[in-house]
Image (cartoon, rainbow, N blue to C red; front, top):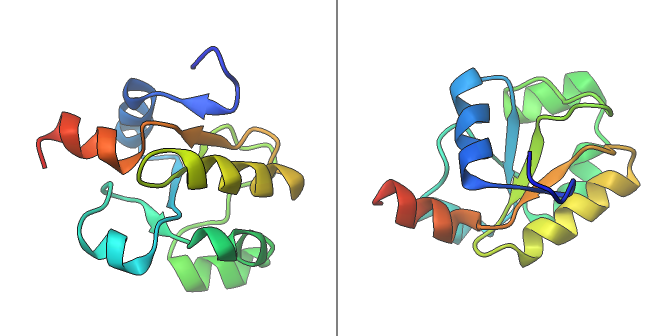
Length: 117
């Protein structure tokens, strides 16, 4: 884990994706997501984080096709393009009780550079 418990690194995110057990939430706009995304991520625009993360488990699964993370999940990561909106989304999730939610501060910008996309 990153030394900052609210952030995760590129290598930590790669590990999480390999395990296949984490929830990566892309909080960018639909237009941004349509231009490229981290494989396996789900799209929840930053302005919808509070309402979508407040859905009950069945509604969340129906809307996003994945199980809603538990409040104590250490594998819930938010990201945007360069880190700012991801940090906002992480704080929103933490305010809802997802106390271990983290922000991938490098965002899609770092991801696409390292992945050669």
